[in-house]
Image 1 (tube, rainbow, N blue to C red):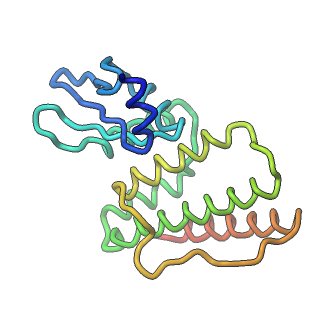
Image 2: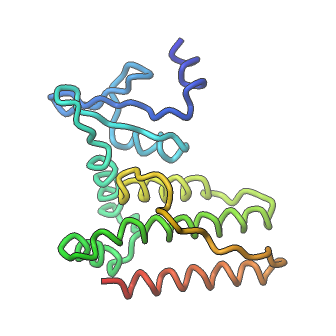
Image 3: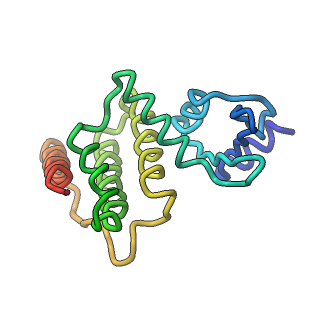
Length: 185
């Protein structure tokens, strides 16, 4: 029955309970899991929710940030130092309210660019799904799981270009995003 539930509730977040001993319990498979296991679920495209068994507090954000920190500390750097610095600054300034929406919009633009590129290529690049899952996990960690991109925001619309021109446009958009992120304080 657990296998049936897993396939039928694929869109529902996987519930992980944290016990007082800090052990993490997968409620679908009835076994204990590690942060690496949770990271694997997310890379596979699964949403997770981690709650404290005793208090009922949602600990998902805390654990997602811990997963990111562990990957960064192992040399699997995804976030440039200046972006990390700017994130720390955003917690100590009034601009904090703008940062989650900006990051959400930036990742949405990146995701749309990748989807468009994949449609043009017509094949799956090795590691693309893992990168996409990491981006979604980071986005959720940074925005606290906020849905949508905020009122009034819409992605720029453009007729798809052909071949190399389209890839050049995507690269240009990514460079602009990186420039904006590095200038943000």
